[in-house]
Figure (cartoon, helix red, strand yellow):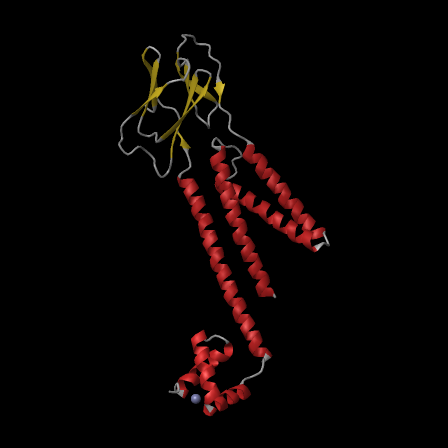
Length: 288
Ligand SMILES: [Zn+2]
């Protein structure tokens, strides 16, 4: 039995472009060896085909470029959406440190060596750090969780692994010195204790700024192609870091939660860098 000529002729364009499946190729080959009609059809096809029309080639190239550009833009938008999501997420979950009020926190000794703190429902998170036998309490909530859901007070035991609690301070990150809430010794002349913010982030952003500027100048001055490409990339990366610092920290140079802030800044800087790089590459593509 012969495969119907019309089927073969339908398959021929795919066959010629090398896009037909293996099975189709075998069938077409077999058919062509024994069907003069289809052989003639192939010859006609070859004659009428436009051999490498430069306009067609250019058109194909443009179509490919547009398609590539489309993919790049989609990837860019996706990365940019991630960046935006991270920034919003950061601000929704940013610690809002609570100023001291009498209702917010009370500390008392309930038995020998047993000191407890009672926090009201505005406190969703707290941290206790120890210096010798002194406890320093920081409390905060976030925009997403402005208060505890069960609305009740929270009792925390202030215990120290080795010795009894001597003093308990309340840390107000945005105020001056820490407040003394409880002391074992009955004396009034306590030294003020300061909890200092971390300044590391401001050094990083200054370094990034200097690097962005220096690399930008180098890329403009150098005649070396590889050096120019590399310094342009570095300049972009450093600029992205500065932008990330601004959207996360604003103009505030200090932080009380260094690791958290730095982590967010890095994630935003990297996603921003990758999406901008892709976007710039795409612009070059169109220009060519
Ligand atoms: Zn045929």
